[in-house]
Image 1: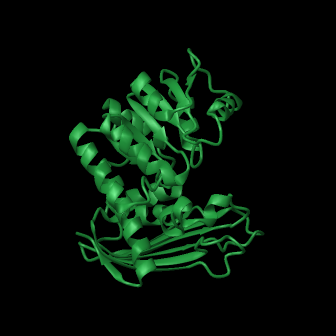
Image 2: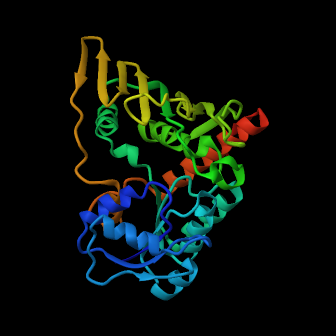
Length: 333
């Protein structure tokens, strides 16, 4: 199975974690996906991560030329945010599977083209929804699927980050894509993952005032979703976590069901039912996200998410952003 790397801009540690546990995996080519710099910086990073390959990956100036020459089975699409869609589309047209940064595109029309290409060629696209593999979230999801809180009625999710100093492209919507799609994609993914339901509608808000000089970047957002199975879900998304906080992010989920409430907060799993109020020790998933992705392609384990899941998550992110832009409620077809 030949693998090529396109770009190194986002959650690339998922790739490194997986490659360290896949010694038989062939990295055949590397390209930056950018005009400003060569992919040599990616090779340098791989060297610093002490990743060893039987044959050193070939460096390409053009990532599309790499796809055509190497004809990889799989690529990672992790270039600048506004290029994810083009990278996913060109790979899908060629029947190449993609491990993509999320969201996989910033444009709804391009999303439809990616969906069609995958249907025609059988390409699988899974986005980097790595917080599913956090021990506390992994454990909470298992408990919900086992029915410990009964039928879910309400879900609230939270993504709070320190702002820090962000790259210049965060200041431009056409390059950054928006805080709801970038930060909120994790929180929206948890809603899909925990409920297993499709979305019906979304009403969202975001605000770029008081964003510490970061151009059009939204500093905060809120999303209200109605799901087709009746669940009411909200997502709180912001870059307002104080610099002095002990961790970069504060990720939370609260699921209220017919038999109890389950919460993840500060890496802990808290379960309250009619006869119990206790904390449950989080369990680590057996494999990493990238390992499960490759294993799913090889047929040795289920995929961590399907192409349909990835498309649904991206559509939800983009419709939520559209709702916030237009001050409307958007409905899913």
